[in-house]
Length: 231
Image 1 (cartoon, one colour):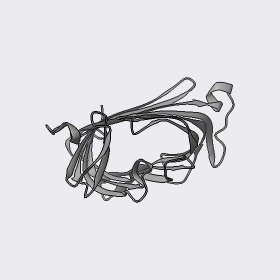
Image 2 (image 1 turned 180 degrees about the vertical axis):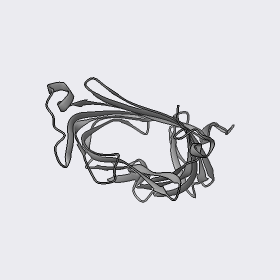
Image 3 (image 1 turned 90 degrees about the horizontal axis):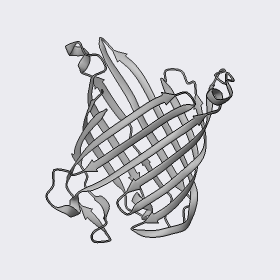
Image 4 (image 1 turned 120 degrees about the horizontal axis):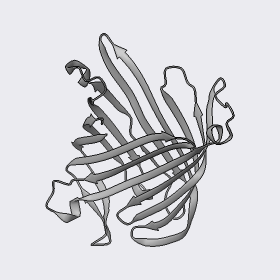
């Protein structure tokens, strides 16, 4: 899918590789995201790539960030039926984070749960290894991260909606501060109005970031208008 987001940042902090510094912008922000998810014989894959402020001519206002997250399913690899009651599956989970001046490798275990009303709910626990922070190597920055991912489809009258999102809590990653980033979304299926159910969704994403990039007291709250086009 392709996502387009637009909102007022109030205070946006990002790293610029050309200057080697953090920059602060109090401005509106646009984000173009390409996102992909698929299941396969032994697990599933998720990946996305963001380009922030691609419409700006000022190089210090444009940045990129992406994640690649393959997981291996114990249920699929062993042929055992782990889908029992609350438990859906147990997986080996990994993520590579790639951004301007930032690199991290994450690896651990995940549990997918069967929760009432949820299309899926994932609980991922990672050992987090930050290998570059602010453009500098950080081979000893190892900590932990918890990542939750969810999707709740629901209907209101004759309209179809989705409440989806993620929650990341990274902790014990010295010298960075513990930090939280979350992106809950509320989306309406507008494609359904034109006979293309599930093709286009619109709504809002509320991005919450505490101690952004692990920098103490740098917080961000951004309400963004969002359009998602699903291929």
